[in-house]
Image 1 (cartoon, rainbow, N blue to C red):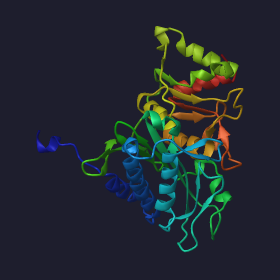
Image 2: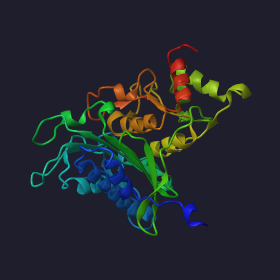
Image 3: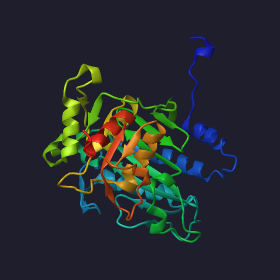
Image 4: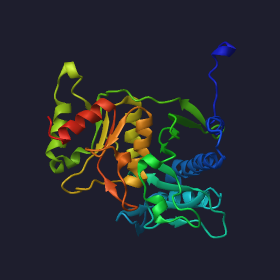
Length: 338
């Protein structure tokens, strides 16, 4: 291969530096947070990859704030996030899907101007089956002027995010992030321990051929959602139907596939969960930011997810996200227009 044909190798550290250079007013604090996300991802990946060989699979015997049994890897990942970010001086407070209240920065450490919200291990019910799982993070600037961060700093509109991303632990480990200037994906090369740019400025297709839904809840769906799914399943060459059904049961994995191939991921309200099941602050908002930056749409079925003003840390919301044309079609069914 000729020298000029060699693919340029870009590490995530170099990419963060290059992105920071686009903001002359940047202080470097956000860049440091993103470095720490990459390091935390490597530490969690190390444990996930050897989970079957050590005593880290199974339940801890505890129940989290969501009423779910806590997996050992859940506990490890949450603890790893706390210990990675509580002392760097960039944060004033954190919040985790696994914790009932906010996570304060210890008084012995410097406080910063940013807020970190995260789901330490999404899809953890799949851990024992060795199915793809992930971590999700969301970063905001604090609202309060000074002192320790509060709930007010954490309960926000998604539109206020300054960065968001996720880590997918699968056949390869990938870190995807955005700071509002496109979506970038990095794949971990275990031989050198570096995340390398593998997908530059991801753009989602305007229309896809895949829908992702837990069809076990079909009998509990709204009439609009049920009719939408039935429409996708009807054969029609002119409109590219039927769509294929793909559902992993890990939001990170399902949205990642949708991001690359197009289509729609939906976790709608049901008669069993009328407010939806996914968490606005820890899952829906960061994923909506990424999807929109890749040219897609993310709604709760009626309005843009990132325009929703959260009222509590663990608020839940219905989710429809993916290719623009597919999400608009879903909204038309939800509105009773079809």
